[in-house]
Image 1 (cartoon, rainbow, N blue to C red):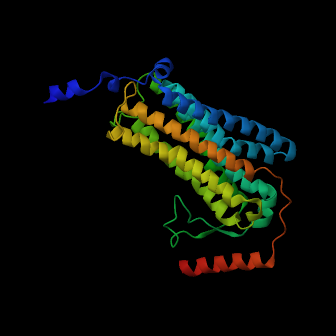
Image 2 (image 1 turned 120 degrees about the vertical axis):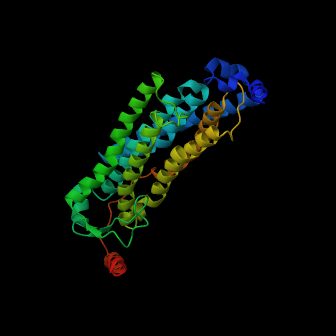
Image 3 (image 1 turned 90 degrees about the vertical axis):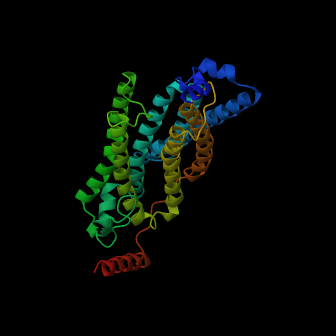
Length: 328
């Protein structure tokens, strides 16, 4: 029985991803149209981003413009790297890690953007110094609301929030370089789930770093979204969350389906290589649509924020009293 099963397996299903020349040779008319359309989408995303960079650089002051340029580049960079990974399947390890490292910086920049929209760190502390901040938010502590106290905002608290997001940008890059080094030596393989494999140790640690970095951003957004509503911060934050889900969660789900055998082998692509190809193609389409939407969100300058109104103070006081009653 085992011999019969071994004879039914195509040898290409057990090989490494094909070369770019082999991919081009296997394309039919439908494949050529699909690859051409997706390449056009990724190229257009990159061109729109470059044009947006010129606009932001001319219209906005420093340092807000550099922060917005970084955030705007999330979808175009991921789309461009996905296009390279689609055409060159053996480079997926490098393209995915480049996209993930860039997005790790974007997570930090989203926190910085909310602070910059409020006038910078000094102005932020003048507005919020001593004000209690609720830290029972996702993705870490959304279920711990009765247990966690309100934490007053201070210079030290703001520093810890920045450090919580900055550590992900730094350590993610370091671990990505380490993974590539181990991969070239044959020690890093995403399909190797043995306890002796490097992937089973590095990837969960990266997951912990990711969750830790998202927590300060969620805390900051919860306390500033009402004040920044006129600056379209809610849809901006929603786009950031969508890019996070699509680039991290969606890719992980597709890879798990490939390892489980749900995504079948299609020579010259093995099951894992085909899953990577499908992930890259989906990513290009999704990031192209996100690029178009975020272009309109950041395509304007804004007036300075008005001072606090009595209604805002009443609402904040009511929220704090409600939380204190729940804790008691």
